[in-house]
Structure formats: C-alpha cells, structure tokens
Amino acid sequence: MTSCIVYARYSSDMSRDASIEDQVRLCNQYIADQKWTIAGTFEDRAISGASALRPGYQSLLALVRQGGINVVLAEALDRLSRDQEDVAALFKIVRFAGAKLVTLAEGEISELHIGLKGTMNALFLKDLALKTKRGLEGRINKGRSAGGNAYGYDVVREYGSDGPIDRGRRTINGQEARVVVEIFTRYLNGESPRAIAACLNAQKTCGPRGRDWTASTLIGNRKRRTGILNNELYIGKLVWNRQTFMKDPVSGKRQARMNPQTSWITENVPDLRIIDDATWYDVQAAQKLRSRPTRPDRKLVDGKLRRPKHLFSGLMKCGACGAGFTLVSGTYYGCAAQKNKGTCSNSGRITIDRLENAVLGAVQSQMMTPELTKVFIAEYSSALSGLRQEAVRSKTEQLQKKKN
Image (cartoon, rainbow, N blue to C red; front, side):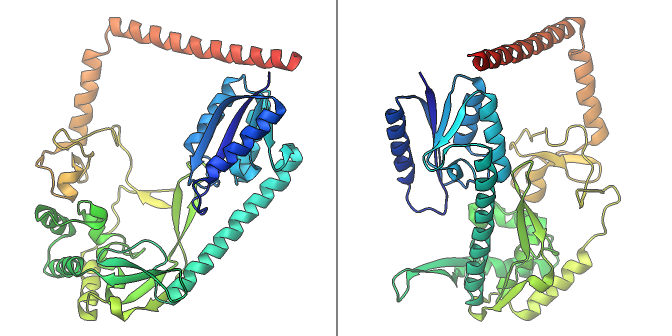
C-alpha cells in the first residue's frame, strides 16, 4: 500500500485562511482516487514560502527522513517552497528516502520541474518584492506610513471615498508626544539615555510596543537614524528606504543593509511635527559631543565592529530578575536590566577573571572526579553507538527499498 503525506500552505499575502482546507480537501480526493493511504497532513498558515523555517514543513522533512513514506503530495510546487535552493534540497531528501514528490498542478516532480519551476518561483518573489516596494513608495509620496508605526503616533484606519480602507494615515498621540518632548528635554539637560530610561520605567511610563524603556530605545544608532532621539518624523520629515533587508541563506534571519543616501526618499509631513527645529539640532549636536571613540577591544566581524566574546558570553542570567548577565563595562559583568532599564535591584558586579576562575574552579573540584569521568565516558560512548546503529539501520532500509 502506498503511504502518502500531504502538505498545505498559504502565504501572508493571501486573504483566505480557508485556503488550507481547500488544498487538503483536493489532495485527499486525489489520494482516494489513487487508492493511497494518508500517513499525515502538515500545514503552515500565513507563512511565506521563501523560508524553509516553517514548523509544518520541518515536521514533514523529519517524517520523510525516518522512511516509510512513498509519496509527498501538495497542491503545487510553490506551496512547498518558492526558494530554488530549498526546492532542490527537498527533492533530494525525498528521492534519498525512496519516495516521490507529486503535486496536483505538475504531477510527479522531476529534475526538469525543479529547474524550471524553481526559477519561475524565484522570479515571482523578485517581481513581488519590486511591486511591493513600488506600492510602498507611492504611500510615502503621499506622506503616508509604509508599514509599522513610530512612538508618539496612532495609526488611522478609515474607509476612503472609493470604498477600501485608506491605509497609512497617522495622527499624533498627545500623551506619547509629551513623553517624546520630555525625553528630548532631559537629554538636553545633560541626563544620559540610561538615566532617562530608568526614570521613565520608575514612573511606569509605557514604552514602544508596551515594553520597558532601554537606553538603546532612546539613543538608537545615529548612522542608521534609529532611536527616539534620531527619528526625523518628530520634526515633520518622513524618511524611507534607508535600509534594505536581505535574508541570510544560512540562518534564515533578515539582515539590514544601509542604502546610499541618494536612494533615500524624504517627504515633508508638517502635521506630524512634535519637536521644534532648534531642539532637534541641539540634541543632534549634543549626541555628537557625547559620542565616544570606538573601543580598542572591538574587532571587525562580518563587516561590523563587535566586542570579543568571552567564555561564558550569553550563558548567564541575573539571579534577581532573570535578565541577561552581561558585560556592563570593560571588565565587569552585571545585570543588563539594571544597567539599561533600571528595573532590577541587583547592582552587583564581578570581573571577568574572577567569574571565570570561580566557575572553572568549581567544575574542576566538583565534576572532574574519577567517578563522574567514568559516567561521562559511558554516556558519551552509548550516545555515539546509538547514532552509528541508527545510521546503519537507515542505510540498510534504503538498500532494501531499492532492491524491492
């Protein structure tokens, strides 16, 4: 009996959640016509096919790798993936497992489909990105938001004269605008971003997206013009296209790349002004005066200056609040929440050398005993043996399937 698994997906740019049910229904009907058996159904809702980091898709791959599946069925190849590399990888995985890749639109998938359809899907994504950018640029030219919102403003959604919702309009939020003015005033009076953030948190003033205030929320990055103190929307200027986001092919995460200033688009929106020009330019000058030179211990990594990682970087938590315990100065570890937000009472500090010596000393004195070493060796050998047996069993099953 032929065992088949079904995959269905719809993108965030599609409007009907019922699309999943429609795809599954059609696939189930095809399976019934072919007299196959359904071994499982996997789905991903409102997730782009440009990424392979989808829960349902990854579960499907895991089941295929286990063996015992004869057919992977979907409505169309672009439901499985729109990325050329991911489509080719899926095809190889399915073939290696001794199964077939079948879609209702293309039939049984071959190397020819992978080449042609993969290229078409990649071109579709590129064309979609260009059209989306063109539409967003049109909004910017009208002084509207191209997505997202800045602190100090409310998004207005009203029906236009022709029926559809008039998107991208914003209006000043009076309460948040007063906080913005307070931040600029405090900074000009000599307070540091950390001190301002701590004060706002102590006052229970809600930050952007309902989160606590941090120093980075206020100061941001002057070069990228991020952060409250660098947002030109507060002086009635809407700046767009400063950055381009590209997906890292390894991690799948989006990475921001600065665009040349010649490609930036600026529109005047005087009705959204919160800060006067004099205050704005005084704050920019104060930032320049207060900026510190690049630390000598920072190194260039992937085109960015970063501090070197230490032995326990990213592995420690504050015992009082659970926030990260990070480098708060050149040689001292401390609670990040206490330093950046002022929301934690733990003001303790410990040097890098003292921390590392204490932890390594404890490991050496309490764990490096003959008894524990024997346990570690036994567990390591057992785990390694299990992996080897699994690899042999999988290879044997593949050979038997090919013979049959």
